[in-house]
Image (cartoon, rainbow, N blue to C red; front, side, top):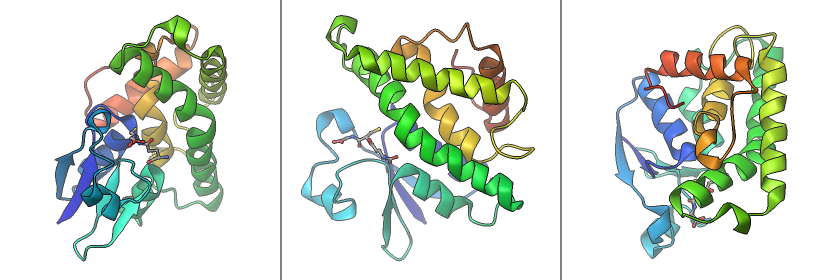
Length: 197
Ligand SMILES: N[C@@H](CCC(=O)N[C@@H](CS)C(=O)NCC(=O)O)C(=O)O
């Protein structure tokens, strides 16, 4: 049985849960509250020395961190990874971009504003600018395509949807991005998720 250490309030963790569920992989979910320091205990650090959730532990005890690496491992050989080489590379493009240009702005604002109750005035304004640029980048891509990579739902869509669908909780208005909103709906339908926005 797989074990996933994750927080139910974290998009990085939920994307792992969604992929496991979508692929019908049985797993134990160990709720790990990042706001209470549960990723910094000696037991957790033995699993992921970086002190972050999510973490995956395989049947044989081997552990894997970094949400998108976990997605790739779980989805190996499945229809969530395009067979076509270019579409597969495009999926990687989005996965890498998500962790550098999207998550550090949008997830951070969601965490600070929505979960930690930090005031807008106390946030770095660059986070808003960077997040809006990321949403605009996605809108542009989705104006001409139903999915981010290839012709069907892939890990790119699941990874990006995790925080994009909750961007309003981070103070981002999704009204200017109709193609993005339609895509969020498609991903939610494909994954059987309740509508977030
Ligand atoms: N790049 C990492 C980011 C993981 C991450 O930032 N996890 C947060 C929750 S979303 C966390 O565990 N924070 C607790 C901490 O850093 O102490 C991934 O994709 O897995």
